[in-house]
Structure formats: C-alpha cells, structure tokens
Length: 249
Image (cartoon, rainbow, N blue to C red):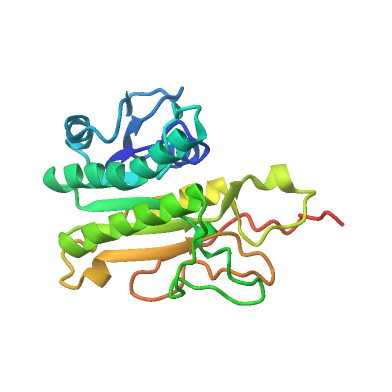
C-alpha cells in the first residue's frame, strides 16, 4: 500500500516508519534520515490545502500521528496556539484533501492522557467519557480526535483513532516504577500496522466506519482496557512489551 505518515520526524513517527517500511511504500511528512526506494519525503505546512492535496495524491492510507511540527514558536502562547491549530484545522485540511483524493482509510494518533483524571482504582474502556484537563497536549489531541470522527460521520471512509499511552521503550524504564499509562513505542507502531488494514468505508452506519481504541501496555492491575472486543476491534493486536521487569522498589 501507499501510506502517508505525518509527524515522521517524531519518536512515534520513526517507530511507525520502521514497522511499515518493509512491506509498504511510504510518503513521509516531516524531516528525517530514513531512505530507500519505497520512501519519499515531503515538508511544509499541513494547513496549506494545496500542499495537503499534493501530499495525498496516490495514497491508500493516511496515518496522521497527531504530532506537531518541530519548528514551533519560542513564545509559549504562540506555541500553544499553533499546536491547537495544527490539531484542529490541520487535521481538517489533511482529511478533507484525503477524502477529495479518494482515500478510504485514515488513522489518527490520539492520547490516553484525556482519561488520566479518572481515579486509578477503576477500569477505563473506550465507552467512558473523556475528561481532558486544560493542558494543550491532551486537549489538542482530543479536539483532533473529534475532528477525525466527523469525517467518519460525514463521508464513506474508515477512520481509526488510537489513544496511545505514554510512549517509552521498555529498556529505558526497566528500573522505574511502572506507570499505568506506559506504552512501548514499538507496540504503538504495531497498533498502527493493524489499523491500516481495517476496511469499513462502505458501512452504512458511521459508528462502524469509526473505530476508537485504547492502546497501552497490559500492566498487572492496569487502569486502561486495551483494544476492547467487538466488531471494530484491532483483531489480533496484543502489546508485546508489558514492563514485567520494571521495578523501582
């Protein structure tokens, strides 16, 4: 498949590239060092409709990581405003270009941080109402998620939102106290790989075109239920890195 990956320079983006590059042709939006016959790099402002249109031509799947660009303003307020604008207007411009170009599958990278305000002694599934705090990282991702959902509602396209936990690598946190929201970035990339194969664009009910999954490690006595079952489940996906060795005591 021909796959567009945004935020390709990010920690998440680099892991997704590594996961998908062996079997797919990738168009990477950002900056980086991956090279190969099946890799093409593009750059520029995702909010530019003309550039977005060029980026999605000939693409089968759009993987929008939700990661903002690296060149954010130094000023704190201006930085937050740009992050918010990329998450909302940027997502809309990109998905609109994709729909116009005939793309049928979209994947959006959201965050489990929007559920963090719930107490740790309850099990949280995708059916729980998000409670984002007034902090730009989680709030912008949630607004981007809502923007993505509307495309599944209004168009015959399959949109999969993945609420990623806190991205780490298991080796880097082996001596730390396990965090209930940890997710090895390699498992995040695997979840994306499972998502790009989901075909639901012709489903008459938008709730079947739209899929939402919590993606985090299966830590013992965890808080978040991972990729719950049902018709739109990530069939076969299970996290491989569950931090069993983590200890800070």
